Length: 411
Image (cartoon, rainbow, N blue to C red; front, side, top):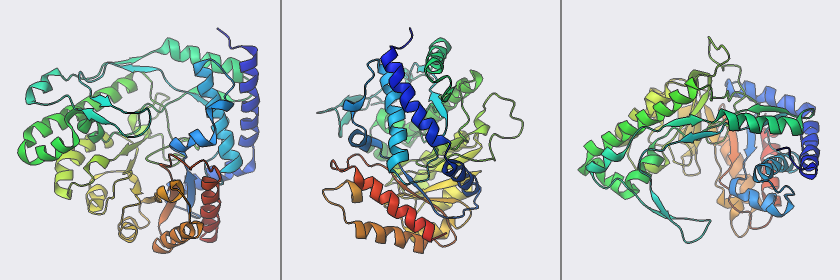
């Protein structure tokens, strides 16, 4: 069914503004800078900001005019792109692509956690279903169904709206992380996993082997079905915060159907933040490697500090390119370990702009200190995990402007 004329007009108006922004020379320049940066030839530090939960305060639901749920999502996507272009002085390129995600359904793993919330947003606790070795028998590899009819319907709908304005494509992403340990603690429980490392390592190895095989089964199914998408473009989010633009992908022999080896991938293990190097290697990294090794370029880490794990990930992950340096990481040690051989993906502490008040002079000192500690590094500064700005949308604008100014000075 075609969209209502009013809704189509709203979307086309927003799309025209996005298309105009995409034609500005700065977008091509940003893409050029990212390609050099991702090839470890930085011209200056790069700056990114991802409001994440804070988008609720930047583009409010009340401004959305479309009624259809899918069109409302598309309208929000366009409005967020325009807000970024008009307000956030970072290095994210705006392009003419409008992505319609593949419609994929999974049968799941046979068991899943029960989440208990007191309110819609905020923390929750959960009841982990794998309580004994016998429960392992209830787990199964996921069945993956690519709904081509619904994907095609959505693509054709978008084309009917944006036909002469934006370039519509069926495009991922279909997952965020291949780290496995998030799923592990959902199934077994965080405290129980910590105990299992000492009291029941056999069961933990069985669980991790199953999760490794389940993820590979899912990825191989998507690859066979042609439902993987290249993520080497200027508007592709990769890792735990980064731009995917690179000429190193797709890999040699690419014939049009995307393979894992043609893509970036993320590995991380935030749930193992308190686990020492040897146990991290035994129960996490060794199960992640068979997955990460399938991909063309690898990002590793998110919020977990990798202080005691740098040598493991650097020494064991082929084609590692982007490494997260979290707010709780030793920045000097990270500079020493990463040098100019890997992207130093620094994540400032988001609490500095999300708390009751903001000390902008302290924010600037923090960025200056990091830049002084990382001479010769290929550094990007990524403000993310910002889930509120206390109703002040200028906070992230000001951080971007300050970080971009210091990045230019450091060129």
